Length: 340
Image (cartoon, rainbow, N blue to C red; front, side):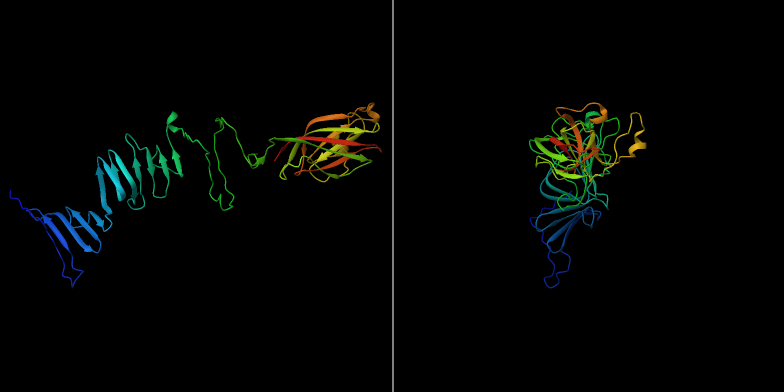
């Protein structure tokens, strides 16, 4: 075997014909191409290994792009590396890696003894799975399927459209046999719902008192409750209600969310069927009976009705005293909490 030592090889096209290829080719003794360097594209050099086609290119910024599959025990890049397909069996250290993929199935698989992380062409990420179907899919068994987030500050989930005003949801799903456990404080600013319906969830506030008087019958009087910190979206207030009248006058004190009507709400004699006397009271209201007359007794010192769930519209409720017989009196309401 003979050795050829060359200090410099230079291939130039005719300056008057810049489209002429500028190539350096190294072949074997059988004429097979070993290396071909092609500088015909301005600013980009194409290099073919064992082929006259391009194996990889180098541009004027020293960026390297490989055409085929690269398999390496270790890859260490400090700049931007762009690969069609990258398979690393050892350690890979990169400042920036762009994987363009084969056709539309671009993937980046990282892991030993099974895939740890997979990304797809559509931007889906799988941990422990090669086929993520959602933005982030975590698959495993036992503790391997847990998602632990440790953060000294806030952990926030922002739904799509959060900053554009679009109505979107953040959903957490558990099957019927699972429990969603929260070890800290749950702080929500909207309405708590179950299966799309609002639930009563009390929010404590500094108590406030509202009182008003009546004289004779009142069909529907609007009352503005205290404290002023009751939000306009409140649907219920939790309140202790005190009532006193100046005579033995049986009447029902009605407090409700909507404008009231003077609808009968008692039976004439004991044991009668209620619906036959006053029909169906389909209203959002509480009814508090103040005894007197035929009851045989009446409160001398007034009467408390504790922890009433009073339907409201923000700070507004409506008052009715059906069945009164000319008495006058007072209603005193102590609001302790509200529910949206």
